[in-house]
Length: 574
Ligand code: WT7
Image (tube, rainbow, N blue to C red):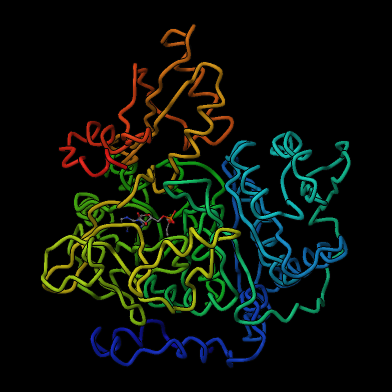
């Protein structure tokens, strides 16, 4: 086996030594990649694992809430992703074109992802709970050529397709006998003849691979463009940080509509030849524990909101299950509070390892490693090969004294770093200052080099580990006939950390009422997504504004968090 007992590399050497001598070529060698050769994520995660003698090893145990289940070996991944790839090619999709995956966590999503990459096309995963407006802006921006979806989501695509003249194909994976309309085509993975051999497109290191949309403060969401070389970072961080070993059964809760679900729900584990389990269902403590017990899950990558929800259910339900196989726990997406880490020690006999990263970083960049002492509440230290710092907010120079807050920044150049925002060069350029990439977050570093997260440095709302942009919500609010002006801000929440709150002024002739509040909430839920739906709407007479008329969300946010607003004089002059 080409994967030496995992983390041998990490535990054999001290963190300092490893960091000092680190070179990403470690991962290149382990993946059998030579610079200048073709590299394709779809092939690396399936064909290559089969060549290593693991063709019959289980790659995926899949299950949904009703208990339907399917199992796929690495050879099935290889052949079925070939089958998808051939289908996509036969439709005339060319390398570099964007193909959107808009599905629940069904097997076709995972196999479709690998298959699209094998053709050289760009995979554009979008969260299946998105409403038609969220879908439209992302498909328009990417000028997407095809979308793969399920019958249950087809109505959203049908609603917007007239506005998407370049969307040539709508591929339905479970059409059955239903009548399809123009541009729609059925792809039934079980009935399509299996394609043993497919000539994988020879993508190069810098060829576009995955396009993930993420929200910023201003403007519509940005398409973070990744390349095939990103697998170098995703493979090694999955191995070292998530401690993946040959016999592991790995569970990542994340949906591939978001970056965690692709970097560590597809590419990281499968490039390591790791068996993973997927549960296509929402949160349910009893069901989750039962699922982990039955599949003997050993490594679990989860998120603070899920952990807080489990905490609410208590340890009694944990005790009813045999979770003795659980060996390693990690978390991502939002601040992992110290209480949650301490609770996990009590509930599972192990602490969650916090990991920090973003859509743009493509891989874990600051983290607690296996074997490293955990300081509950801290995100840990930079991954070897990542140069991180916190910068002074005015000079953009690294802060050297411990305990002083600054902007989390990374030196550009690691393999899975975002290569650009699709059709938004200015937005991408704005992320760099003084030779550093700015994450948009604030933190401090203690005397031992551990990072302590403090908060976002912008107006983006992080609800349950999902970023939502205030601009998107405000634009959708303005579509409602009663809304004159609006501001969307974060409001603290004990489980989701933050939820959306909207402040709204009404047009003449409309009066605030509970019915109107509900109607507006529903409008956002349907147009955008349940995540973006305001949990509260406050009708106000006016909104705080700068002298030039720009709405100042910060004033509203500070009130919600009971924080001092601070000096607004410069902002108000904007
Ligand atoms: C933002 C990135 C990459 C995983 C999924 C989210 C916040 C992420 C942590 C953490 C505190 C965190 C940051 C970051 N975040 N991990 N361990 N502690 N905050 O990807 O949607 O691009 O969001 O999530 O604010 O910038 P994303």
